[in-house]
Image 1 (cartoon, rainbow, N blue to C red):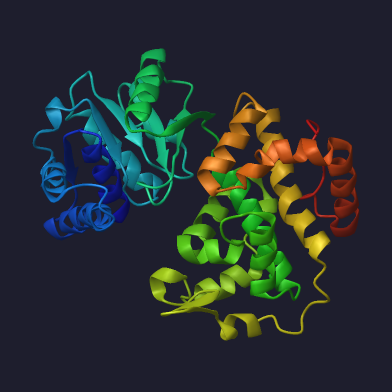
Image 2 (tube, rainbow, N blue to C red):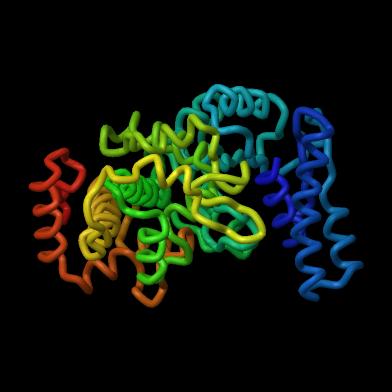
Amino acid sequence: GIMGGGIAQLFSDRGVWTRLKDVNYDAIAKGLAAAYKVYQGALKKKKIKPHEAANKMAMITGTVDYSGFQDVDIVIEAVVENMEVKKKVFAELDGVVGPQALLFSNTSSLSVTEMAEATKNPSRVIGFHFFNPVHRMPLLEIITTKYCSQDTIVSTLEFAKRLGKTPILVKDAPGFLVNRILLGYINEAGRLFQEGARIEDVDDLMTEFGMPMGPFTLSDEVGLDVGVKVLHILEAGLGDRYKPVDIFNKIYEKKLLGKKSGKGFYIHGKKRVVNKDVQDMVEGEGGVFNRDDALNRMLLIMINEAARCLEEGVIDGPDVVDVGMIMGTGFPPFRGGLLRYADTEGIDTVVEILSDLEEEFKDGRFKPCGYL
């Protein structure tokens, strides 16, 4: 698919011979087309010459079986986000690749430990989570499991650097780091919307804060189906605070998935305009939009979750959160990162506002974690 094609393009651009395997030749053609599109964009901008693009594209080959896999050093799966499918792929790979091969998963939220357990040698399985679009986003989440050998971790970090990416090490936990923090923020934006806030008001508030796009624009870009699916995975692993807001489920049921379906929170034509049908779903349900209150709710829910990640040892320091949020979500670099921003505001202030919000909503999602 598109993600696999994007990864193949990045590998070939960095001089890595790449073999795409998929279930049929149509799927391989889509992967090759996705890689070609990135090179075409680079040609238009005169970043590379035509013969360079042709040479790099020639480094990607396609197959519908595992021919050639016995010699590879690395296999990365980018199949559908379904644990049974992924385990099946890893079990198959285990019988095909040589003993030297490392097995990577590009999952955005599923347990890498569970995938590793589908193989005979789980020490060589590791998470290698790219962000979309692959050629533009600088972050790579390296997800380690209790089985990972030091050799696997070191080789993976070396390879990430060869690809020109900024790697962060994250322990295997629901949603890892970036998606876990980000989805809480998007869900909170959904609550504001449900209470009567207008789509463009919430988006404008966050772009004025410095985010590259607002939560509803981002949701449309990623696809509401993907967002709701990841929220359900997080809800199963972390509890009710990740339960998708009702309005997301209503929009999802109407197949308004965002940019990919042409309509979501916005209508995506020549010009992007707010989808009045979606806005009308909540019209008149809420009160006045308080900008300061809304900003606190969206930012502090992220800060609290990031602190929980530190508390649980998912990452080994606040700097990892800051790098992850700037490189993975475009959190405003001039603010120094999410936790640097929290320090600037003052942790006492953060705890006080969170406590006030918890007093107001009484559902546990704003309860300041022990670490704070």
